Length: 100
Image (cartoon, helix red, strand yellow):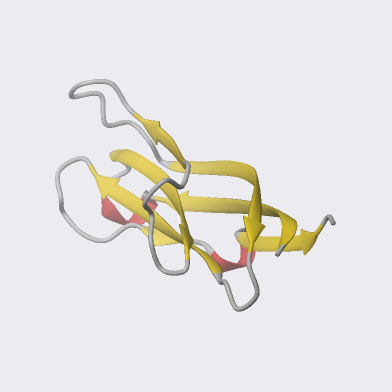
C-alpha cells in the first residue's frame, strides 16, 4: 500500500431553505465505510440556527492498499427542516495525491 493526502472543501448554502442552517459535516469513507474515519463538523448551538452560507475544509493522511477507494459525503441539516440545503458544486472540491 501507499500513503495518500486527501482534502475536502464543501460549501453549504442554506439561503433557499430559510437561512437557518444547523449543521455542515464532512464524512470520509474508506472502501465505503466511515468506521474509524475522521469527520469534520460545524454545528450551531442549541436553537441557534443561523447558518446562511458556510465553507468547511478538512485534510487527512491515510494508508490505502491496492484497490482501496476513498470518498466523502457531506451532510447539511436545516434548522426547521423546511427543505434541502445545497452543496455548491462550483465552490466545493475533493482531491488527493500519493505521498509515498
